[in-house]
Amino acid sequence: MGASVLEAKPITRKQALKRVHRDRLRPLRVLEYLDNSAVFEKCPVEVKEGYIVSDRDNGDLFLVLIFRCLSGKPMEALDIRVHLYNERQPVPFSRTDFRYSWETATLGERALNGQPRKEKECKRERALVHGEEFGQGIFLPLPGSYFHKMQIELVGVAYTVGEYEPLGLIAGGSAKRFAEIDSNLRSSYVQMNIFQKAEEDHPIRVLPQAGENAWLCCCGHKNPASVPLCEACGRDKDWQLENLSVEKLQQVRKEQDADQNVRVLHDTSAYAQNRYMESDEEKQRKVQQCNEVLERLAAQEKAKEHRRNMVLPKILLLIGIAFAIWLICELVFSGVNLGLFGGE
Image (cartoon, rainbow, N blue to C red; front, side, top):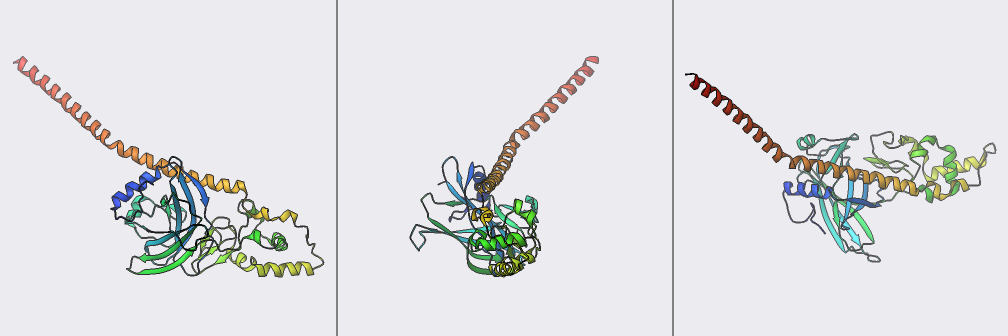
């Protein structure tokens, strides 16, 4: 596998940036999305999104993780560990440590309040602030050998005040999928749902969760705890946490069955399990969106490389223009002088 910006061998930030730029020029495609729906009770950072990509040319595999800082204190670095397992083996055959920080040039594209942060701004404010996203465009190399399972451990975070907080948390999917609950409960949700419009673009996928720093919307999007409405679908946080639990849906179902004035739809064929699972079209749309991001990153890096390559020709052109101007001036002055002498 080719060199990576995240090798164990120490390298300078300048060397790391060069490797980041080279990795972004790779023709990448998305292979698999990771389920990171777990919301930690007390954690200064959340895994917002994760997926595995491959190089179309040589087949190299990479892991892309996008995080969101939820700490009240400026965060300097995040340490993670990737565990890889073989089938039927309880012990990982590979453990690889990575650090996300400005010094290691591994924060990637940073965004705050949905807006990308400019390079000058990131250079001036190197620490991550509350709500800031990072990690986009950073490709963590994976071994070419087959692995059956992957675990991402959040090892710890370093703060600008000199503190280090160990975490030891395993990121992954722990939210209960809506498709897994009883069909009668799904039918009850359809009748009580007040966000029908949101179902068109962001259908319910999981039952919501809430932690101290973040909450998981039923559409699968993670939001900071301070945000009352989901950033992706606009559903209300409090309504979801109050109404979208197995216990609450069971209670609603009993009330509906007991109320003779309510027509209960017992034929739940319209609410089959596959209705609430991600369709192939939705998965394809996500892959397409991710590939568009990767293509945009590659285009940006190619444009930067082109601008860098044009610096020397531009300098030479300016030198040539300056020399031509100087030569013309010399010829003009020489002609004037000759004219004066000839007049005498």
